Amino acid sequence: MSVWVYPGSFDPVTLGHMDIIRRASVLCDKLVVAALHNTSKNSRFTLQERTDMLRTCTQGMPNVQVESFGGLLVDFAHQIGAQALIKGVRNGTDFDLELQLAFLNARIGGDLETVFLPTGAQYAWISSTYAREIATLGGDLRALLPSQIIDFVKANINR
Ligand code: PNS
Image 1 (cartoon, rainbow, N blue to C red):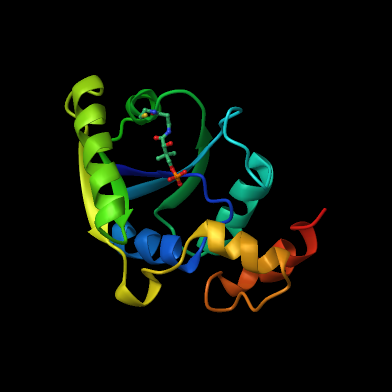
Image 2 (cartoon, rainbow, N blue to C red; image 1 turned 45 degrees about the vertical axis):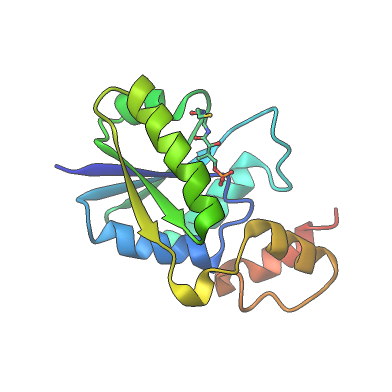
């Protein structure tokens, strides 16, 4: 059974992330979406909130499972028996960074593969950072975020 891991901060999950989740989930038997628990990286939303938002948005996707992880991604991938990491790529900057991480993860993670998926062109400009900025300033989030989480993000962004 092919198990792939899609890691990220998902602070919050965007339409770009959802595009990758949807497309990756048809390429493997099980897709584990893994939200990073990282005390050194300040997230606007708590780990619980980020995984709750992911679960809400992936309801009805039977082979998608939402988890969280701390420590090394390769260790988490091995623990759950994954064969590959999946990364969405929006542009050359993403690709340069992700290629370095793919080399690194292959070196420290043994036979763990990295699969790159180009983000759907209509989502290539979206980032969680922009979504947080627009939410903070009271703008329209419909082009950036899944509809199910917009009210929650708006209500909790400025707390
Ligand atoms: O959504 P993000 O913040 O771009 O995701 C980054 C992520 C979670 C993929 C990356 O930070 C990661 O893999 N962190 C886990 C720690 C790790 O394995 N580090 C080794 C590479 S430096």
